Amino acid sequence: MLTKTLMATAAVFCFGATAASAQTIGFSQIGSESGWRAAETTVTQQEAERRGIDLRFSDAQQRQENQIAAIRSFIAQGVDGILVAPVVATGWDSVLEEAAEAEIPVVLLDRMVDSSPELYLTAVGSDLVHEGRVAGEWLVEAVAGEECRVVELQGTTGSSPAIDRKQGFEEGIASADNIEIVRSQTGDFTRTRGKEVMESFLQAENGGADICALYAHNDDMAVGAIQAIKEAGLKPGEDILVVSIDAVPDIFQALAAGEANATVELTPNMAGPAFDALEAYLADGTMPEKFIQTESKLYTQEDDPQAEYEARKDLGY
Ligand code: AHR
Image 1 (cartoon, rainbow, N blue to C red):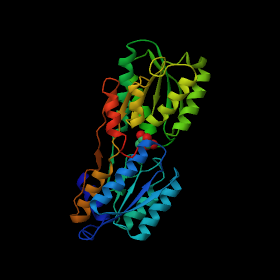
Image 2: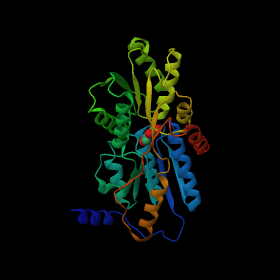
Image 3: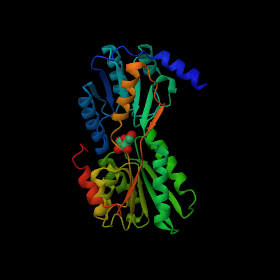
Image 4: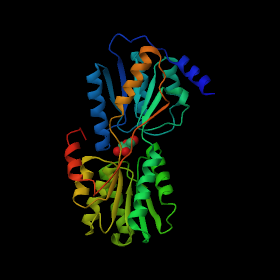
């Protein structure tokens, strides 16, 4: 089956055409909803410049229809390849088929789609379920059997990180019946919404007295929620434990201040492996793995957060 698929996929995309000249790559980015996304954009632009790639960048302002329009425009421009960070998981079949018909390889960055893998060259990303599981397992250990009512700030509805990080966390706490998710709502991966939704959680949960922990699908929502917890007169990191995902500089400041407890790192450098795969494919048809996985490392207050902050603060977050 695999060989036939690869053969089929190889037939879909044309290669070798532009090995000599600088490649033109279209990049459909979701927007800049979080520090992490801003860093991904910066790293991708720096990587393109370093490789002499002509990068055509499009900011979709969080809207799928803008991404689909951007991809169609890249196809019309006759680019050599396309990078896309798909805002949600569904609804990509037709535009991916159009890119395949135009024999333009597409690489997914940091989020997945439910389309057939034959319709894209490869996907570069973390194991999103694993990230959630690591966060859940950290909480199980941290509360050590104590009763713990958790509130959850979900990512963008319908996005693969929101779906998978929720599933992973539930798997991570499944062994601990002392831990229960009592409220769960989207904060759209933004600080503003993270703060607002946390304020509503605090109001609904006896001013926060009935909340033991916050699980946020990204650090930006957690940073917003930390502000809300403080404004409610509680100590984030103590009265309410805080665990999230991304490892952006500001969460390390919160870890250093004892206002957050743990974060699971997501590297913003998805473009490096993506360009490597595209360049090899365009040069001689080398087929990459269908999924190129990036590492997910857990950081806590014990991991010298101030030094981690210093190491990341100028990386475009
Ligand atoms: O797809 C990855 C997620 O997108 C990041 O965790 C989050 O910060 C961004 O919005």
